[in-house]
Image (cartoon, rainbow, N blue to C red; front, side, top):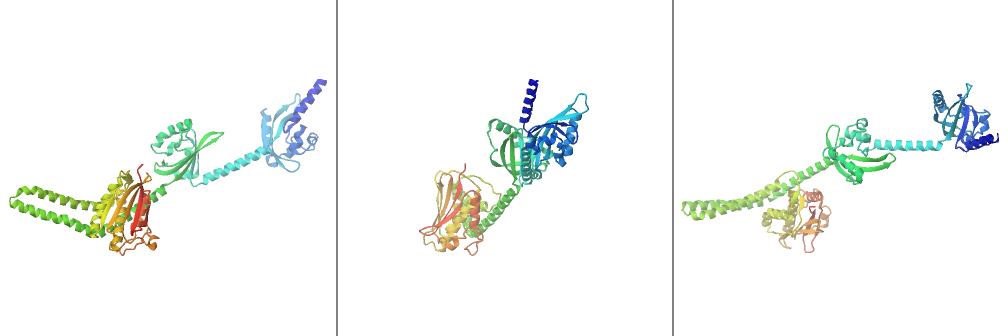
Length: 499
């Protein structure tokens, strides 16, 4: 008898040490309690005697909004002889609200129709608050992502799409249901479409990244098959669910269209400026061409007289002279056509010294008419540059013409030589320098010298230096100037060397 009593006391001590409230009650909607452990008061605020003496029923504590659902769960478990688990709110003695986890099962008494419920009630208020906060945080994050202006897509390590926000749906023309579980490469044109799986597999195995962790511009494909440029940034996220990859995508189609429009506009203005310059040079060019044409006429008449006189031995020399002067005239016309040609901007690897010498030859006629000499100082063994040759030649020609006009405006009293020099600077840039001995640049002119439509010429458009600077900036260089101590000005620009 003593051992049995000791066992009961020991069992009672163990029950009272359980977290929460252990109970035994009667299976009825009011949930009367026959036994409650010591944790009853800490959980509900009521002493255990209030329940055991049935001054209060457990159902009275259950929140009215949760009472029916809690009883439905218990009843379903009793009817199927299974364990029940229910989460619901209770109202404590002080009017506070707590979440509890009620788990137990029905106990059938032998020889009686009475059904008892035995179980354990645990306080899960803190957990439910955490869940609520996490839910709100997640809902807020999802709302932010879904309303973001940029497309946000997440994939797993197999490349399968898991989330696809509203901006992504608008950008690509797919709904989330159409793409959930599909491979991300469906949004990629070739060659990325074919190579993506291998790249992702290699990254997962080696952590060797090409795009992940950085941003780059690539091409994407819409549902209708159209291809468009995007800026893509990919980040990796580690969680209990495993590795995930988040892609942030910005459609840069409008940006590229704007850049193309601006480039075409610049080319149009540059073409107009070239024609304006060539028009002003037309008189000098016509005079220069007239010389070889006159020589051709004279040598033709001389050849005719030699032929009639039977002196045929001198005819080959006459023919050579005719050919030389014809080629000279053709060379002048070719240089004019090259500068006047309105073609699409195309960059190619070029020798900067060759470009400068060609421009010097083109401007030579005008310089001679102004009684000015052009001196070319070519830097030795310069690396190549990748440029639009016509545009760079246009810049040099514009600087030469401006310099010659400045020198002529003061009757070349500081000298009649204008110099064009090329040199390597810092092993990464080539500098082209045009040094004149003209009137220099006043402070008033210097403030707006690169401003469009600003000019000191009576017939000028005021676009030359503005266009020249835009051309050089578009090539990755800079255009600047300074006045010389000995008179005149130096204009210079840089071009990055070919890598």
